[in-house]
Amino acid sequence: ATCADDLCLIQSMVAKSSNHTPATFQMNTGFVRNGFPSMGSWVSYGLGAESQDLPAFVVLPDPRGLPAGGSINWTAGFLPAAQQGVAFRHTGDPILDLKTPESVSPGRRQAEMKLVSKMNQEYLESYPGDSTLAARIRSYQLAARMQLSVPDILNLKDEGPEVQKRYGLDDEVTAGFGRNCLLARRLLERGVRMVQVWNGGAFGKPRINWDAHEDIVDNHTTQAATMDRPLAGLLTDLRERGMLDDTLVVWSTEFGRTPITQGFGATGRDHHQHAFTCWLAGAGVKRGFHHGVTDEVGFNVAEDPVTVYDFHATILHLLGLDHKKLTFYHNGIQRRLTDVHGHVVEALLA
Image (tube, rainbow, N blue to C red; front, side, top):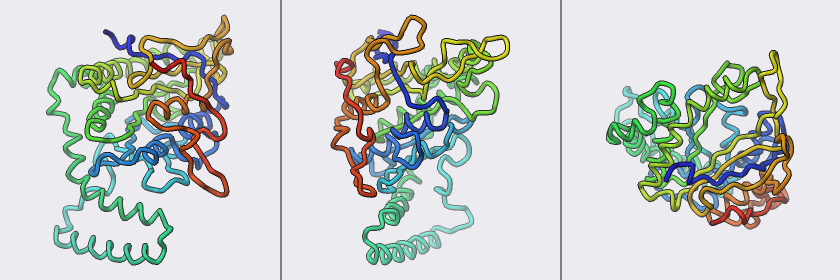
């Protein structure tokens, strides 16, 4: 079996915006405006935490830069603050302020934490509805446990050279994304509910993102080289370890590119939200399957359109969650990831 045999392609995706930031927000939160909870936050809210030593939702940004909209893409929004995605940095301390400074003795640190805990508990008793403070208290407790668990996860030496090579850690082009893919597998093994791995750095910097306005062949060839090998390594690794049976892999983008050329020399392509492809693999989806058809030039969807709402509804279904019942009351509305839309795409289910 090859990685291609695992893929369930959706070739008829449709989004609402052709602007990077609102389109990225919609793919991550269901809404083109900021401030709404990300899908990872909804998943951790619905499924709860499995590990007591790690966050339920971890984000691994591209080491070359953050995506359009930055950390808003993994915000908890109006959900309890404990559902916020925790981003691991690529260099230096993986999580800022987690490590106790060398100038602070263990005794002093313990005394400080005891005092802060006492003050927080007294405040929490006075304001029992403050989820932000409750989450902060839990984050202190989790941070203490993470001081032991995170260094172990980040130690990739025990994976062995063959596994590291499979993920592309031996090549400068693939090492950054490959390291994140390998970390994702290690985090999943240790009970993290959702891991989000990003590919594509900050916009405005040449050849480190998927924005192919000038030359789509050069841009996509360069970008694909950073991703293909690590992603194939991840799928192969999950399958060989028996994890793909209950792990859902989601590959998505905010929109596609036009079938019409653009730019100097007519070698670039513009943003296109009317027809593009995403894929799923693993738990509960058909293998080696493709869904949806575009017109003859790929401009519009001709058969079986799948909105972002449908995409999210299907993902939640595969994780054992009903998108219509996974709600949170906020400002007079029972909010949900799919707003008031979406249906499960039954054709994708195995």
